[in-house]
Every structure is written in C-alpha cells, then in structure tokens.
Image 1 (cartoon, rainbow, N blue to C red):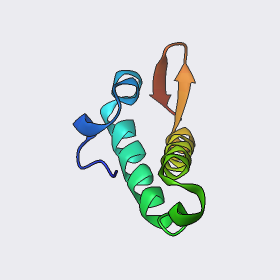
Image 2 (tube, rainbow, N blue to C red):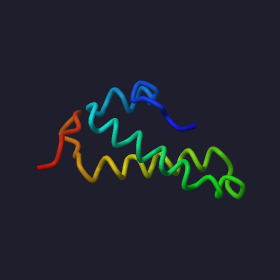
Image 3 (cartoon, rainbow, N blue to C red):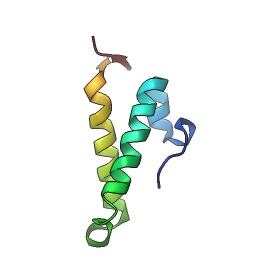
Image 4 (cartoon, helix red, strand yellow):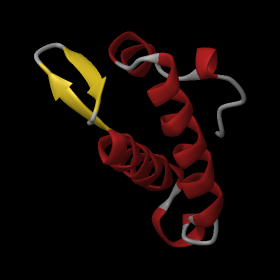
Length: 75
C-alpha cells in the first residue's frame, strides 16, 4: 500500500514529522514496499508493511533527530 501523497501517511507520522521528513518517510516506505514485494509470498502483507515502516523511520533518522516531542533536522 504505497502512499501517493504525504497526506496519505498514517496520522501518527503526519503529527510528528515536518513536511520534508514526511517526504523522506513516504519515499523510503514506497521504495521498501516495492523492494520487499517478492518477500510478501513468504512472510505476508503485514510483515511487508511493518518492514517498510521500519525502513522509512530509519531513512528519516539519517537526516532528522528527535528533540523532545519534535523532530528537527540534524546539523
């Protein structure tokens, strides 16, 4: 279930990340979703989605860090 727009992302992601980080998240999720499509047959769709979300958060953490309740761009 790739996301076309940032507004399609889960509410928790939209509430916690700035727009630029949401875009990183969305693109990483979609890429991982496609990359793990063959693994779907072995593990199931739920596992594929979970993996794609983990990959997306990892991509965000490359450029952003959490500062209290907010995510801010790393220096």
